[in-house]
Image 1: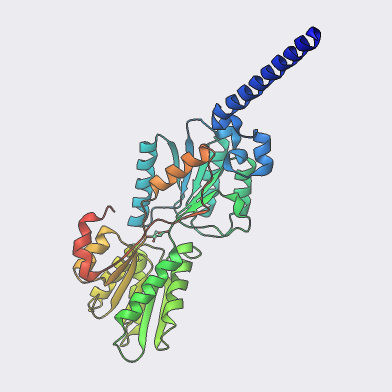
Image 2: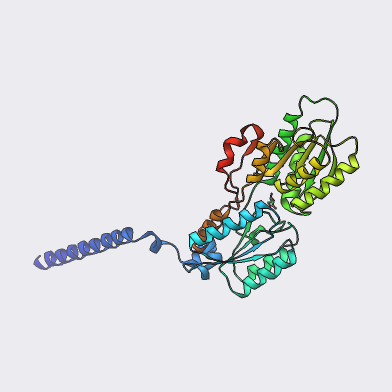
Length: 354
Ligand code: AHR
């Protein structure tokens, strides 16, 4: 009996100890930081594709970014470059900047030099939208994440870049078309439209033109009678507009859609030299929203400006930090944009930062 009691007591003691041990283990595991309870990298790789699993070697280091800027053709572009340079400084990110001056080949060379230097992230503002597959593949093989900025790339495999930060150019064209319809609503008869396109093959030129056409087709008697690329520059805008006016003779266009402010400013010079009044004889709609375009709106020479925001630097640096921190990003990031008309330009001009 005594022996039985002793054995039972010993068993009870043992069971109690086991219970305490189990409770202790459970409580400890509950108090552990979340990270230490995460599955190992291997498990993450098989279960969820996130950025840290794609680019593990770049985490937690000082960031070096290679940035291939496409050129310096417009005030918008200068503001875009300045925004990226300043934001890199503010974010403590080392920026290697190469300006390709409108050459896709120069962009490829710059990108290859970034790969050689083993930068942590590559940002590309592509001059045109096609022809990027091979170089993006080279970057992927080097294990470097890519951010596309401003203009987009036409690639089937969108995993070749992490995110695309840039305006919705199609929407900008839609806004321009809606303004044109509204402005000309009481004008009877056929409306002759001239269009100054941007760089051939570039996303803003393609998409703005498409958006504009999709809207104005609502009115059968509105017709784009002349359309030509003028490279997003003042000189280009002036030259092509002179040509348009010569060709049109007695029947000049009643409305001009310029794909950016610089070309609109060049066109205004041509229109004035031709003896017509910009903003009255020819209604002018442009895109960007530079300070100079606002001045022209206040002078009555431009009727409406569709905003395209070049201040993308902080978004880019933030994206780089997120990527390096192993966090996921949306595939598309669109900055907020507005539309401005002559009537309210004076209220906005002092707020323009470019
Ligand atoms: O890609 C953005 C466009 O490029 C801007 O509208 C234009 O001004 C610039 O050159």
